[in-house]
Image 1 (tube, rainbow, N blue to C red):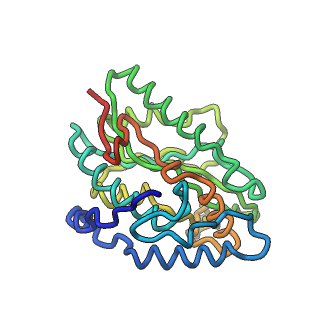
Image 2 (image 1 turned 90 degrees about the vertical axis):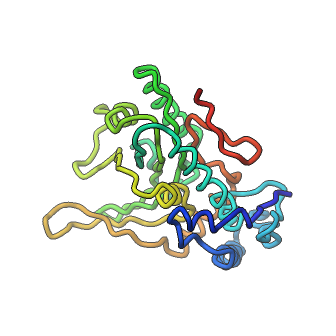
Length: 272
């Protein structure tokens, strides 16, 4: 049974500028709502068994699942301040990286589980290994893989994966060279497969990179004739599908670490 240790300093996050971190009551309420919705007739047997036993202090499951709101909160409560300390200790600027790859988009009917998380992590790892080979630098990055539900102008829906990272130890140009999708993929004119931005608040942007929720992004034509997207919550049916996917993943399975690892619950660099 995994211990959550909820007292691992929410005050620390507030001191880092993340004052609105979700409360235990928020997480418990979302957990209750999720269990109620996933318990509908026809739901996969065993998917939510034990989740109702989870508390702010301990896990009710043999294996913590990524879908558990309480476990997710406890994980982020630990990881965000540790990542903040580790990343800000590195020389150079910090960058928030968002990476979207055409291969990480699958038909709606296939579901988000059709996207291979190990393949996503391998793609990111290869990019950073190439950066090290070219420059001799060994960057550190902490973030996660997430999915959203896209709907194009024709109304066709797809599940799309993306990676959010906070990276240290490389320049903006080096990150673009390492993680850029490349010219061999035909992309729409409005696509932004790689965005690298300055970091203004490490803890707040790390919290965004590690977030649990998903959204739907609905395409429309703006007044200037260009395609834009409305960002809205998932509807009830798609939220259930998303939650079922998370409940099949181990806690932390979506987390991506580059140049560091978690050892006995502590994030440590293995960059010499």
